[in-house]
Length: 80
Image (cartoon, rainbow, N blue to C red; front, top):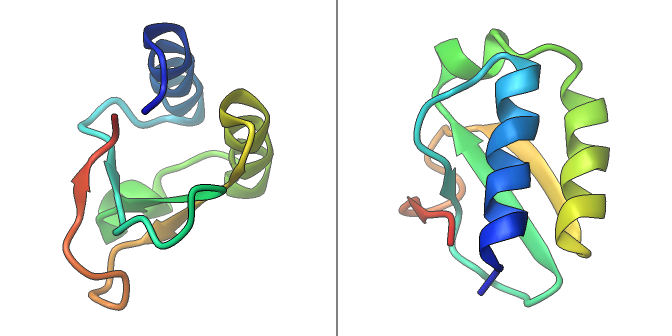
């Protein structure tokens, strides 16, 4: 769905925020949003989550945010 450059930029944004693991998203309910899911330990280790949300939204051209994966978001799938 997203091009190689966008995926690389998203991975780099997460790296700058303190996370280098696999990128998982919740089920896509709308084409204009993405919810990135991180385990509690990884989510708590992020630097400035709200700034990361803003950067991701700009990179992807849709509303994007990062949350702690707690089961409310359904089964995670790889970010593509």
